[in-house]
Image (tube, rainbow, N blue to C red; front, side, top):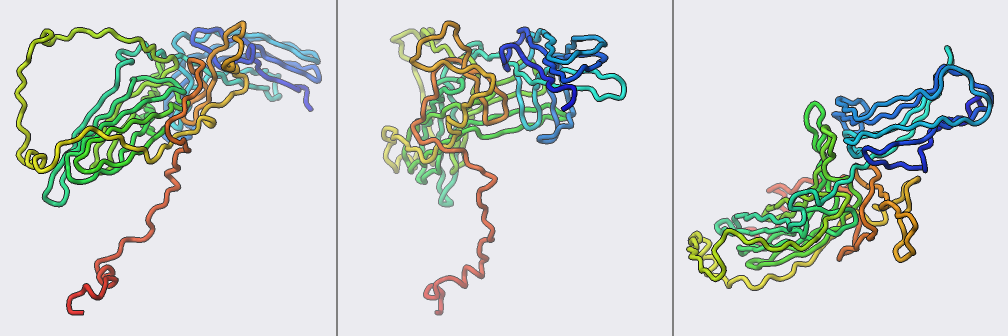
Length: 430
């Protein structure tokens, strides 16, 4: 064992997560088995965003700095045998963005200590990574408590000469959610044709944009749920819920190289129709206060308004006339529910504060929210509130691994092969 038996950085109270504008304190701990001459002992605190043009590549093409401070803890001298502590303190910038880590870039903060050795001796170095969380208050986003609604109409042909349309309307109860909260989805599908539709799928998508030499977009499916198709000339209503897993917050204020967006996409497989609803993921939940109705600019109560309906196309009018009118919408059942398991999503991090157990006596000092680890492109972060995750109506299973799905390895039969394998009794002259 050499003269330096222990050389490490210890942050005060074992903290790993800090807020912008907060002081970061700690000490450099050195344990020596023999006297150690040195030229200087320095400590630095840095924070930056680095983006590469290739996934999981450490050769960064663009870099943006947020913090770069250095302190000299000791000048030239000699440390005697034993333990030594050198305290330090840094002030984090008030505009420091939240820590983030993805395949094409990351926002990293760390403290690095160096013992500058005399000539012809190797310097001693150690580092410690910490995280910055700039909480996103969802209540600061305009109209965040309003329902999220989008609709589309898809016209298509079937049976060569017939045409029809499908009206797909999707809505959510809110526009923003926090981790562990349930996203309530409702899809109304009106099949105005004589052909059954394919399954309906709702997917929670994460889109991370990286600004390298050009913009790079990383889109992944966080969770999805699939419902059954809609019968011909029927109108159905599909209600489901998705448990929001551990995810980084929407946007990254203070960072110009990485941007995070979330969307809820509801789509039909046949005919192909989809609507996309923007969704915000934050750290402070929406304060759902009932809003008083605002009087609109319309006519006064009791006044009758003259509405002249437009005539539908002749082809659609004939089709509707030949079939019964739509009855009340029927409920659509769910075929598949795919999202990360809550037990795999929420985990503890060493050095993180433990959440207070529900039903127990409150502590003298309130603990910060639970620290979570994401299964996606993110770093530890806090969630607001003490409520645990709410189970969904369907059984949660792990997301499918699309890269392992089977693909057809044999080409479809040719025309000659199809004729050769046909029933001889169906061939003329046999």
